[in-house]
Image 1 (spheres, rainbow over the protein chains, first blue to last red):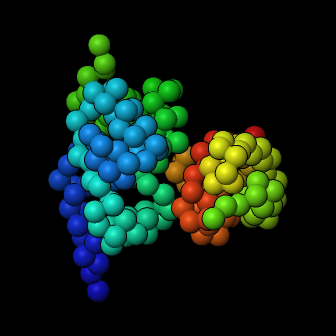
Image 2: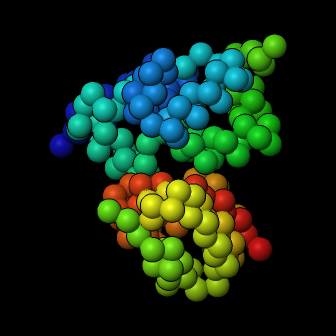
Length: 112
Length: 76
């Protein structure tokens, strides 16, 4: 029995190199953690697709069971779940984030 | 909805008996905490897996009763 929400997530994370499931939008984040995730991605200068889970209750719950991860935001790079805000922050601070992007061949520009 | 820090620590230690747990109440509202958890169970696991172990220990409260838990996990 296929799960339409999972199918949607799967196609989004396959069609976009970097996807951030978040509360609100990159321009108007509606949660501190989502806002911080957006800041980090903007700082490393990587284009990403922001998906506002607040617009879709099914997606908001479905994403949590898709990865067995209970919170939002959630970052995906090349279809792989990277982590939430804490992990993204830790990876950003110790350079692992840009290393991961390089390893996956995802172009990014360090902020000037 | 909120959770006392002691309950968070107890739940984590119930699932990870060897864990050293330090919890900081970020906002004083029982909803936003930062926790550092050190446990042998994390050795060899990815950061995502380590955090998932802690979330499992919290038995579904993460994202519900507990709105935010900034996690730092590591093996000893």
